[in-house]
Image 1 (cartoon, one colour):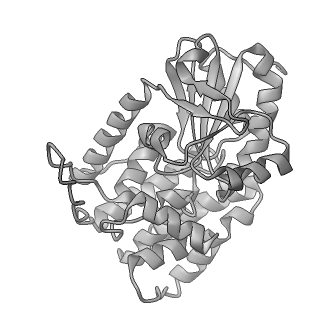
Image 2 (cartoon, one colour):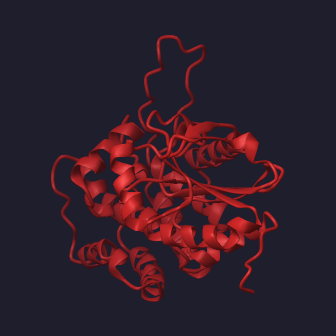
Length: 325
Protein backbone atom coordinates (compact mmCIF):
# COMPACT_ATOMS: atom_id res chain seq x y z
CA UNK A 1 0.00 0.00 0.00
CA UNK A 2 2.21 4.34 -1.10
CA UNK A 3 1.87 7.13 1.57
CA UNK A 4 4.25 8.11 0.47
CA UNK A 5 1.85 4.98 -0.19
CA UNK A 6 0.06 7.90 -1.42
CA UNK A 7 -3.52 6.76 -1.44
CA UNK A 8 -3.09 5.04 1.87
CA UNK A 9 -1.94 8.10 3.65
CA UNK A 10 -3.99 9.45 6.47
CA UNK A 11 -4.27 9.38 10.17
CA UNK A 12 -7.14 9.88 12.49
CA UNK A 13 -6.51 13.50 11.88
CA UNK A 14 -7.68 13.06 8.24
CA UNK A 15 -11.25 13.71 9.30
CA UNK A 16 -13.51 13.28 6.30
CA UNK A 17 -10.64 13.33 3.80
CA UNK A 18 -11.48 11.08 0.85
CA UNK A 19 -9.13 8.67 -0.89
CA UNK A 20 -9.44 10.52 -4.16
CA UNK A 21 -8.64 13.84 -2.50
CA UNK A 22 -5.54 12.32 -0.96
CA UNK A 23 -4.49 10.91 -4.31
CA UNK A 24 -4.87 14.29 -5.99
CA UNK A 25 -2.78 15.97 -3.31
CA UNK A 26 -0.04 13.41 -3.82
CA UNK A 27 -0.15 13.79 -7.57
CA UNK A 28 0.16 17.55 -7.14
CA UNK A 29 2.89 17.58 -4.55
CA UNK A 30 4.94 14.68 -5.84
CA UNK A 31 7.16 12.59 -3.62
CA UNK A 32 6.79 13.98 -0.15
CA UNK A 33 7.98 11.78 2.66
CA UNK A 34 5.45 9.90 4.79
CA UNK A 35 6.06 12.26 7.65
CA UNK A 36 5.57 15.37 5.53
CA UNK A 37 2.28 14.01 4.22
CA UNK A 38 1.03 13.10 7.66
CA UNK A 39 2.04 16.46 9.02
CA UNK A 40 0.35 18.38 6.22
CA UNK A 41 -2.91 16.53 6.70
CA UNK A 42 -2.71 16.54 10.47
CA UNK A 43 -2.58 20.27 10.94
CA UNK A 44 -1.93 23.53 9.20
CA UNK A 45 1.12 24.47 11.25
CA UNK A 46 4.52 22.86 10.92
CA UNK A 47 5.20 19.88 13.13
CA UNK A 48 7.86 20.53 15.75
CA UNK A 49 9.90 17.46 16.63
CA UNK A 50 11.63 17.08 19.97
CA UNK A 51 15.35 16.36 20.17
CA UNK A 52 14.58 12.66 20.60
CA UNK A 53 11.98 12.56 17.81
CA UNK A 54 13.85 14.46 15.11
CA UNK A 55 16.58 11.86 14.40
CA UNK A 56 13.92 9.15 14.13
CA UNK A 57 11.82 11.30 11.79
CA UNK A 58 14.86 11.93 9.60
CA UNK A 59 15.70 8.24 9.43
CA UNK A 60 12.14 7.31 8.47
CA UNK A 61 12.28 9.98 5.77
CA UNK A 62 15.40 8.33 4.32
CA UNK A 63 14.33 4.69 4.49
CA UNK A 64 13.68 4.32 0.78
CA UNK A 65 17.22 5.31 -0.06
CA UNK A 66 18.67 2.38 1.89
CA UNK A 67 19.62 -1.04 0.47
CA UNK A 68 17.01 -3.61 1.43
CA UNK A 69 19.19 -5.48 3.93
CA UNK A 70 20.14 -2.25 5.70
CA UNK A 71 16.56 -1.01 5.54
CA UNK A 72 15.26 -4.15 7.26
CA UNK A 73 17.52 -3.73 10.29
CA UNK A 74 16.97 0.04 10.36
CA UNK A 75 13.19 -0.45 10.33
CA UNK A 76 13.42 -2.87 13.25
CA UNK A 77 15.68 -0.53 15.24
CA UNK A 78 13.48 2.50 14.59
CA UNK A 79 10.42 0.66 15.87
CA UNK A 80 12.27 -0.09 19.10
CA UNK A 81 13.49 3.51 19.43
CA UNK A 82 9.97 4.91 19.04
CA UNK A 83 8.56 2.77 21.84
CA UNK A 84 9.96 4.64 24.88
CA UNK A 85 9.04 8.10 23.54
CA UNK A 86 6.37 10.08 25.42
CA UNK A 87 2.81 9.28 24.31
CA UNK A 88 2.30 12.32 22.09
CA UNK A 89 0.78 13.00 18.70
CA UNK A 90 4.28 13.00 17.26
CA UNK A 91 4.90 9.49 18.55
CA UNK A 92 1.82 8.35 16.66
CA UNK A 93 3.06 10.11 13.52
CA UNK A 94 6.34 8.24 13.79
CA UNK A 95 4.82 4.83 14.55
CA UNK A 96 2.22 5.14 11.78
CA UNK A 97 4.69 6.55 9.25
CA UNK A 98 7.11 3.69 9.90
CA UNK A 99 4.33 1.11 9.62
CA UNK A 100 3.30 2.53 6.24
CA UNK A 101 6.79 1.97 4.87
CA UNK A 102 7.53 -1.33 6.58
CA UNK A 103 5.71 -3.50 4.04
CA UNK A 104 7.45 -2.18 0.92
CA UNK A 105 9.35 -5.37 0.24
CA UNK A 106 10.73 -8.29 2.22
CA UNK A 107 12.22 -6.93 5.42
CA UNK A 108 11.54 -10.01 7.50
CA UNK A 109 8.93 -11.05 10.03
CA UNK A 110 10.99 -9.86 12.99
CA UNK A 111 11.08 -6.27 11.71
CA UNK A 112 7.35 -6.27 10.97
CA UNK A 113 6.60 -7.65 14.42
CA UNK A 114 8.53 -4.85 16.09
CA UNK A 115 6.70 -2.28 13.93
CA UNK A 116 3.29 -3.75 14.83
CA UNK A 117 4.17 -3.91 18.53
CA UNK A 118 5.18 -0.26 18.51
CA UNK A 119 2.05 0.89 16.67
CA UNK A 120 -0.21 -1.15 18.97
CA UNK A 121 1.51 0.23 22.05
CA UNK A 122 1.21 3.80 20.77
CA UNK A 123 -2.50 3.41 20.04
CA UNK A 124 -3.03 1.87 23.46
CA UNK A 125 -1.25 4.79 25.14
CA UNK A 126 -3.03 7.40 23.05
CA UNK A 127 -6.35 6.08 21.70
CA UNK A 128 -7.78 8.08 18.82
CA UNK A 129 -11.36 9.32 18.58
CA UNK A 130 -13.52 7.92 15.84
CA UNK A 131 -13.12 10.06 12.70
CA UNK A 132 -16.03 12.28 11.76
CA UNK A 133 -18.59 10.24 9.89
CA UNK A 134 -18.78 10.89 6.16
CA UNK A 135 -22.03 12.32 4.87
CA UNK A 136 -24.32 9.74 3.33
CA UNK A 137 -25.52 10.34 -0.20
CA UNK A 138 -29.09 11.51 -0.54
CA UNK A 139 -30.23 8.25 -2.13
CA UNK A 140 -28.53 5.98 0.42
CA UNK A 141 -30.88 3.30 1.74
CA UNK A 142 -29.00 2.92 5.03
CA UNK A 143 -26.46 4.99 6.95
CA UNK A 144 -22.86 4.10 6.16
CA UNK A 145 -20.89 2.49 8.98
CA UNK A 146 -18.27 4.48 10.81
CA UNK A 147 -14.78 4.09 9.38
CA UNK A 148 -11.98 3.43 11.87
CA UNK A 149 -9.02 5.80 11.85
CA UNK A 150 -6.20 4.87 9.47
CA UNK A 151 -3.65 3.79 12.13
CA UNK A 152 -6.07 1.11 13.34
CA UNK A 153 -6.56 -0.11 9.77
CA UNK A 154 -2.79 -0.17 9.29
CA UNK A 155 -2.32 -2.29 12.39
CA UNK A 156 -5.14 -4.65 11.40
CA UNK A 157 -3.56 -5.00 7.94
CA UNK A 158 -0.22 -5.96 9.43
CA UNK A 159 -1.89 -8.60 11.57
CA UNK A 160 -4.14 -10.00 8.83
CA UNK A 161 -1.79 -9.93 5.85
CA UNK A 162 1.72 -9.98 7.33
CA UNK A 163 0.85 -12.48 10.07
CA UNK A 164 2.23 -10.56 13.02
CA UNK A 165 0.69 -10.38 16.49
CA UNK A 166 -0.82 -7.34 18.17
CA UNK A 167 -2.67 -6.97 21.46
CA UNK A 168 -5.13 -4.10 21.40
CA UNK A 169 -8.57 -4.05 22.98
CA UNK A 170 -10.17 -1.18 21.08
CA UNK A 171 -13.46 -0.80 19.19
CA UNK A 172 -11.80 0.87 16.20
CA UNK A 173 -9.22 -1.89 15.91
CA UNK A 174 -11.94 -4.52 15.99
CA UNK A 175 -13.89 -2.54 13.40
CA UNK A 176 -10.78 -2.39 11.21
CA UNK A 177 -10.39 -6.17 11.38
CA UNK A 178 -14.05 -6.63 10.46
CA UNK A 179 -13.68 -4.22 7.54
CA UNK A 180 -10.69 -6.09 6.13
CA UNK A 181 -12.58 -9.36 6.37
CA UNK A 182 -15.49 -7.81 4.47
CA UNK A 183 -13.12 -6.37 1.84
CA UNK A 184 -11.60 -9.81 1.26
CA UNK A 185 -15.03 -11.35 0.74
CA UNK A 186 -15.64 -8.86 -2.07
CA UNK A 187 -12.33 -9.77 -3.72
CA UNK A 188 -13.15 -13.47 -3.65
CA UNK A 189 -15.72 -12.99 -6.40
CA UNK A 190 -13.78 -10.92 -8.89
CA UNK A 191 -15.39 -10.12 -12.22
CA UNK A 192 -14.49 -7.23 -14.48
CA UNK A 193 -13.77 -6.23 -18.06
CA UNK A 194 -11.20 -3.59 -18.96
CA UNK A 195 -9.32 -2.57 -22.09
CA UNK A 196 -5.56 -2.70 -22.36
CA UNK A 197 -3.27 -0.16 -24.02
CA UNK A 198 -3.95 -1.71 -27.44
CA UNK A 199 -7.72 -1.62 -27.09
CA UNK A 200 -8.12 -5.32 -26.34
CA UNK A 201 -10.79 -6.17 -23.77
CA UNK A 202 -9.80 -8.49 -20.94
CA UNK A 203 -12.61 -10.19 -18.99
CA UNK A 204 -11.62 -11.91 -15.77
CA UNK A 205 -14.00 -14.87 -16.13
CA UNK A 206 -12.50 -15.66 -19.55
CA UNK A 207 -9.19 -16.47 -17.84
CA UNK A 208 -10.33 -19.65 -16.09
CA UNK A 209 -7.63 -22.25 -16.48
CA UNK A 210 -4.92 -19.61 -16.01
CA UNK A 211 -3.19 -18.39 -12.87
CA UNK A 212 -4.01 -14.68 -12.74
CA UNK A 213 -2.04 -12.03 -10.84
CA UNK A 214 -3.94 -8.72 -10.67
CA UNK A 215 -1.66 -5.82 -9.77
CA UNK A 216 -2.91 -2.30 -9.01
CA UNK A 217 -0.31 0.39 -9.65
CA UNK A 218 0.36 3.92 -10.91
CA UNK A 219 3.20 5.67 -12.69
CA UNK A 220 3.76 8.09 -9.78
CA UNK A 221 4.06 5.32 -7.15
CA UNK A 222 7.71 4.49 -6.23
CA UNK A 223 7.02 1.00 -4.78
CA UNK A 224 4.97 0.17 -7.88
CA UNK A 225 7.82 1.15 -10.15
CA UNK A 226 10.27 -0.86 -8.09
CA UNK A 227 8.33 -4.14 -8.32
CA UNK A 228 7.35 -3.93 -12.00
CA UNK A 229 10.62 -5.33 -13.42
CA UNK A 230 10.11 -8.44 -11.28
CA UNK A 231 6.56 -8.76 -12.58
CA UNK A 232 7.83 -8.50 -16.16
CA UNK A 233 10.48 -11.17 -15.52
CA UNK A 234 7.89 -13.50 -13.99
CA UNK A 235 5.56 -12.90 -16.91
CA UNK A 236 8.29 -13.86 -19.38
CA UNK A 237 9.31 -16.88 -17.34
CA UNK A 238 5.94 -18.29 -16.26
CA UNK A 239 3.60 -16.96 -18.95
CA UNK A 240 4.14 -20.07 -21.11
CA UNK A 241 3.07 -22.16 -18.10
CA UNK A 242 -0.22 -20.34 -17.64
CA UNK A 243 0.52 -17.13 -15.74
CA UNK A 244 -1.41 -14.01 -16.73
CA UNK A 245 -0.43 -10.71 -15.13
CA UNK A 246 -2.89 -7.83 -15.39
CA UNK A 247 -1.55 -4.45 -14.33
CA UNK A 248 -4.41 -2.04 -13.59
CA UNK A 249 -3.90 1.73 -13.45
CA UNK A 250 -6.52 4.41 -12.80
CA UNK A 251 -4.54 6.95 -14.80
CA UNK A 252 -5.15 8.19 -18.32
CA UNK A 253 -3.54 6.45 -21.27
CA UNK A 254 -1.47 9.56 -22.01
CA UNK A 255 0.40 9.05 -18.75
CA UNK A 256 0.60 5.27 -18.80
CA UNK A 257 1.62 4.68 -22.42
CA UNK A 258 5.01 6.46 -22.43
CA UNK A 259 5.88 4.94 -19.05
CA UNK A 260 5.24 1.41 -20.35
CA UNK A 261 6.96 1.98 -23.69
CA UNK A 262 10.09 3.46 -22.10
CA UNK A 263 10.48 0.44 -19.84
CA UNK A 264 9.42 -2.12 -22.44
CA UNK A 265 6.95 -3.92 -20.17
CA UNK A 266 4.98 -6.52 -22.11
CA UNK A 267 2.43 -7.87 -19.65
CA UNK A 268 -1.10 -6.46 -20.21
CA UNK A 269 -1.71 -3.03 -18.72
CA UNK A 270 -5.40 -2.28 -18.25
CA UNK A 271 -6.90 1.18 -17.83
CA UNK A 272 -9.43 1.94 -15.11
CA UNK A 273 -9.77 5.76 -15.21
CA UNK A 274 -13.19 5.65 -13.58
CA UNK A 275 -11.79 3.48 -10.75
CA UNK A 276 -14.68 1.01 -11.00
CA UNK A 277 -12.39 -2.00 -10.69
CA UNK A 278 -10.21 -0.30 -8.09
CA UNK A 279 -13.33 0.33 -6.03
CA UNK A 280 -14.62 -3.21 -6.57
CA UNK A 281 -11.34 -4.53 -5.14
CA UNK A 282 -11.43 -1.90 -2.36
CA UNK A 283 -8.01 -0.59 -3.36
CA UNK A 284 -7.09 2.23 -0.98
CA UNK A 285 -3.33 2.01 -1.30
CA UNK A 286 -0.96 0.85 -4.00
CA UNK A 287 0.68 -1.31 -5.06
CA UNK A 288 -1.66 -4.17 -4.26
CA UNK A 289 -1.60 -7.63 -5.82
CA UNK A 290 -4.06 -10.52 -5.86
CA UNK A 291 -3.40 -14.05 -7.11
CA UNK A 292 -6.21 -16.29 -8.37
CA UNK A 293 -5.76 -19.97 -9.16
CA UNK A 294 -6.92 -21.73 -12.32
CA UNK A 295 -10.44 -22.06 -10.90
CA UNK A 296 -10.69 -18.34 -10.21
CA UNK A 297 -10.21 -18.72 -6.44
CA UNK A 298 -8.37 -15.99 -4.55
CA UNK A 299 -5.37 -17.74 -2.97
CA UNK A 300 -2.93 -14.94 -2.08
CA UNK A 301 -2.71 -11.19 -1.83
CA UNK A 302 -0.25 -8.48 -0.85
CA UNK A 303 -0.89 -5.08 0.65
CA UNK A 304 2.29 -3.50 -0.70
CA UNK A 305 5.34 -3.93 -2.89
CA UNK A 306 6.64 -7.49 -3.23
CA UNK A 307 10.00 -8.90 -4.24
CA UNK A 308 10.45 -11.67 -6.80
CA UNK A 309 10.77 -14.17 -3.96
CA UNK A 310 7.52 -12.97 -2.38
CA UNK A 311 5.66 -13.05 -5.70
CA UNK A 312 6.85 -16.63 -6.23
CA UNK A 313 5.56 -17.57 -2.78
CA UNK A 314 2.17 -16.13 -3.73
CA UNK A 315 2.10 -17.92 -7.08
CA UNK A 316 3.05 -21.22 -5.43
CA UNK A 317 -0.27 -21.06 -3.58
CA UNK A 318 -1.92 -21.24 -6.99
CA UNK A 319 0.17 -24.26 -7.93
CA UNK A 320 2.68 -22.37 -10.08
CA UNK A 321 6.22 -23.11 -8.97
CA UNK A 322 9.48 -21.36 -9.81
CA UNK A 323 10.86 -22.98 -12.98
CA UNK A 324 14.42 -22.13 -11.89
CA UNK A 325 14.32 -24.41 -8.84
